[in-house]
Every structure is written in structure tokens, then in C-alpha cells.
Amino acid sequence: MVLPSILSFSKQLIQQAVHPGDTALDATVGNGHDTLFLAEKVGSSGRVYAFDIQPEAIHIARRRLESARLEERVTLFTESHHRMAELLPEDVQGRIRGAMFNLGYLPHGDPSIITRPETTVPALEAATQLLAPGGMMTVVLYTGHPGGQDEADAVIRWAQGLDPNRFQTMWVQLPNRNCAPSLLAVEKRSKT
Image 1: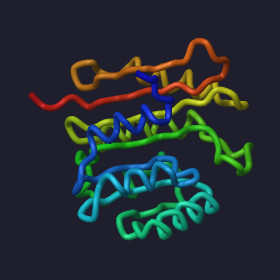
Image 2 (image 1 turned 180 degrees about the vertical axis):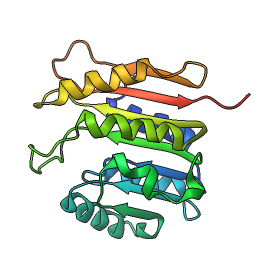
Image 3 (image 1 turned 90 degrees about the horizontal axis):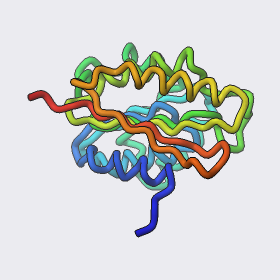
Image 4 (image 1 turned 120 degrees about the horizontal axis):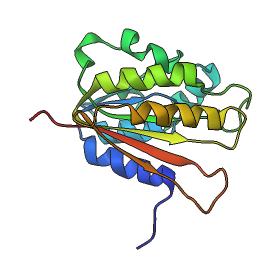
């Protein structure tokens, strides 16, 4: 067995929760890799909602989706992820099967434009409300850039406060690599 990378493990967890016809969320579009992955998973009858504050990221993602002929499955927002609850249609509340956060900055973009705890934590809180029972949220945390460790610490503190009767959490780290990304996974427990 070969251990997966943090990014591939994030996708493995999400693909267990997201199926054709489902609704999914990419909270940090970046270069659109997760957006495309989710669009493939939800199929032609599903929907992906994707957020990024940078027009450049939205443009890159749109091109990537158009190249794969999947743009009709995705609604792109040039907005901060902390506004997702107010911008998403009311009928998706509590129906999101998978949500992906890939924190930090846009690769090959301006490294001074980063995700920050003051918007990320409210976005995570909103995503927990948007998740369907049995839904999965993954958060890739990067600490190798200025502000990254502070954001990661805030996210882990937030996760520690989640009600264990409603959410199961897991934090995967690579302890033998300095500044390696880590993965927080949050599963909303099915109603019993």
C-alpha cells in the first residue's frame, strides 16, 4: 500500500460522499482543480457552487471547466467564501454532500492574497450548516507562508469545538516534514 498525498486523500474522502445528482461546494477555487473534480463527481444532474475572491482564479477555473465541457454544472462566484450561506440558493441549505477548502494562496498568483481566519472560520461554520447528513468537508491547511500557521491554528481550534454528537472530525498530519500541509476532515453525522 502507498500512502496518499494530503490532496489525494482529501479527494478520496469527498468521492465517498459525493455522487451523481448531488450538490457540492468548492469554497476556495484557486486554479480550479477541485472545482473540476467536483463537477465530474456530481455528474450532469448535479451542481457545484464555487467561490474565490480573485477574478484570476475564477477565470482559470472557467477555462479549465470549459476545456472539459463541464462548465454548465458549476456556478462560479467572485466572492469570499464567508458569504456562501447568503449567496447560495435556499434549496441547497442542508443538501451539500461535499465541501472542499484548500487554504492559502493562489498558486502562481499573488502570495500576499491569502485566506484568513476571520473569513475562513465563518465559512467553515456556514459549511457545517449547509452540509447534508452524511456530508463530508475537507480542509487542506498550509502553514509554510506568512499567516498560514495562524489560520491553521484557528481552524483546528474551531474543529475542536464541534459537537461530537453531530460531527466526526479527523486531522491528518505529516510529522516528519516541516511546513507540510495537513488535512482536516469533517463529516456531518447522519440523523438517527
